Image 1 (tube, helix red, strand yellow):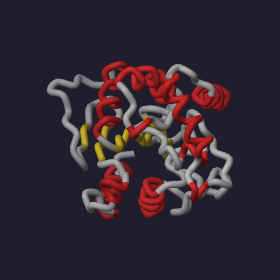
Image 2: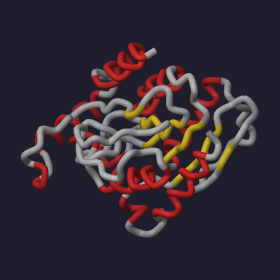
Image 3: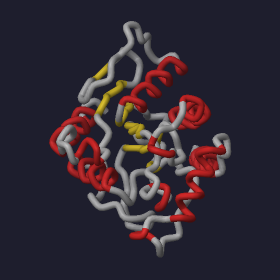
Image 4: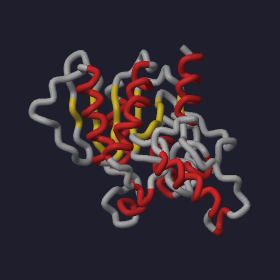
Length: 226
């Protein structure tokens, strides 16, 4: 199982299905942001983060241009990641609240973090075709998590991708179609549960649309269902 998981991560990193996204990742890595001019950017697809024996899968949107696209680890190196890992740490899903780079000692407990798109998209907006091209990585991810009990989607796009996954895997009858809202919890018999949450983007956290207590509560709801 570990070999298959490692192979999946390697396949994600070398994926070249979306030339627009690969070009964007490379361009950002070459131009850099002034604050990170001394960094050697990752500049490509970012693999999953966590142990496949985890019971919870968190699905984000995509790597940040100067966050995960710089550090090479999901939600690492930007304000969204700072907010996310702080909340995960408070609930016991992470061993620390800080996330600086891949060598900072951060580990996850019972959680894997993935994304609807594994490459940083221009304007944080992958196209429908790019999401479809990346969908196979998500399918393979859940198939290699034998103890999976639930998914938590960060944002509406990730939520809809998760619904597509539930249909593709035959996990649940989605009629009527579940609607995205922060804190919504959908549970089915003999199927993983699905929780929706606002994405911890600066647009949401700086405006107060998503507060730390709100995100912590969502993770607490996930934990009690594992």
